[in-house]
Image 1 (cartoon, rainbow, N blue to C red):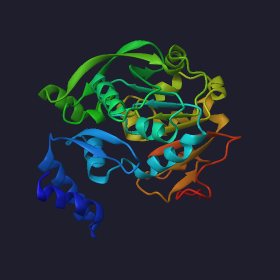
Image 2 (image 1 turned 60 degrees about the vertical axis):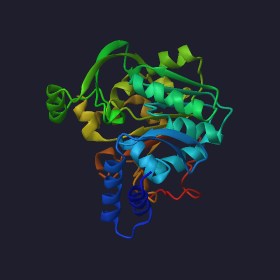
Image 3 (image 1 turned 90 degrees about the vertical axis):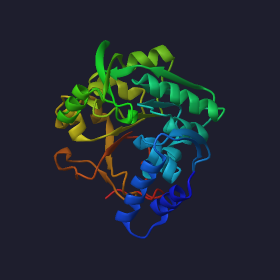
Image 4 (image 1 turned 180 degrees about the horizontal axis):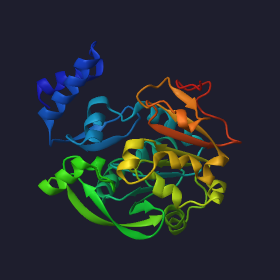
Length: 302
């Protein structure tokens, strides 16, 4: 790695001025764009990364991805009977969970065939086992749906469309592929999973379709559900983001909103109409289970 890139990386982590830290991160990305590296993470596993994609670049700079979420999953892992990683991307959270609970079965799922290859590559890099990776989209039912992939930022691939995406499709900078979809219960049944200790969902706004494929009885097999909550992404996929809170399944869980950019912020969601805009992740936990960040976690309920 070039000396100037090392300087950019150092400042992006330890610089005194936030705006300059962000600028150093962007300069690192430009200087190392397209470079393939093996990066050891702070959590005891390594990843093969390609600089340029947002997930790869952030992980290369900081040796981890989404620190608040990483700490939560690391803490939950030993208590969970299994891990379902929906939208597994390059396998960061799959590897993180396995590192802290190597005996629990893991099912990693992604609609993007490139990400399935890369997830498998990172599992093999670390010598992990008991992990199954499946290339399929998760929706409310079986079908075939166009899936939009930017080759330069594959981690942002989505079933959704936006005016910018339409321009990129017309310009040929985004590829559209047909992806087979299936409801999550069917995918789990085919994998032989009957109990879900933790389900992590990050599918770039298509979360409402996934939840529409779950009946109310699904709570009996899923102890915890952690999903990305970005209303504008849901709307780009054609969903009413507010409607997600009327799903009958949710009544069997306590809901907490997390701001993954601020490790100190976690609020219990009692009024979905007044969720702070900083909240980007929702954590659902069955009533009989302890909330993991009330006392011991750096996050707290307010």
